[in-house]
Image 1: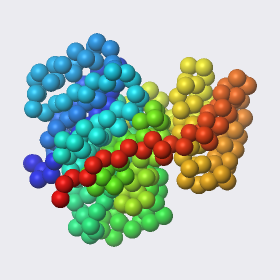
Image 2: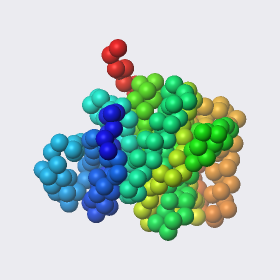
Image 3: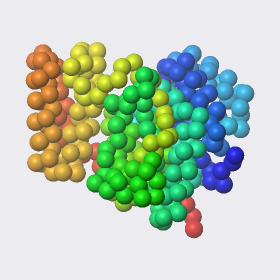
Image 4: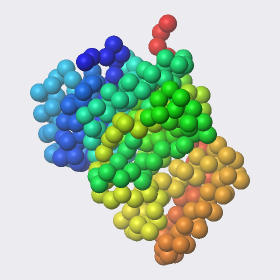
Length: 307
């Protein structure tokens, strides 16, 4: 089964060669495989480089590896991968991390759903898979954000719901969305880059959750992204990015009141988690950084396809 449209898969990887190869194998085994696979290597070590060299040597017409000079985080990786896919002429870009294992018909279900919705409207922004953890329960860090009109597509197909935002764990993004809304903000580095990007798209183009398109996210634990009970010195750097990025989003899009309400929620959750004063001070500093960050100034746009 081949698509008339040009579909590129983008996989972002960093120092997880075994998971990467499992992800790649799952992408290649799709019942509706992508025409090209772009792997963005975030300056990984030699083991990952050896794996990628082997893939390119074995499948030179299928794989393209973008090796970054430094680790730019998931946000920088997706920025680069989507940019490359767009420049290569992709009509749709299917994105995921290297610990995403799409089930065999995952992409086919996304394509069928977007084709069905396009029969009823002119344009859509993205379609996203239902993300499960390794035990089959919903992956808590990848829960989609419900749109007020979530039930609207049920008249067409009850397996499709409208959403306002989702994660990059198996999301199929339209070329129209990239042309209209640009690229993910690479300066986010990690956490919330996918939510901001999908929410940005859904302001003008509808996004949908396809519940029978399944991807497994093989994270070590099934946890919320900002579960402060897991905050310690080792994980502090990730939490600081996550808090800064979300604060910036709320201050930029909701104004000072919405931003301060989010800060209040963060501090309350920190207090309930009984973190020490050093960690609390670091997270409070991240809130202040979020207020000053002004992420919209970093949004990159692409040149539209010639008409």
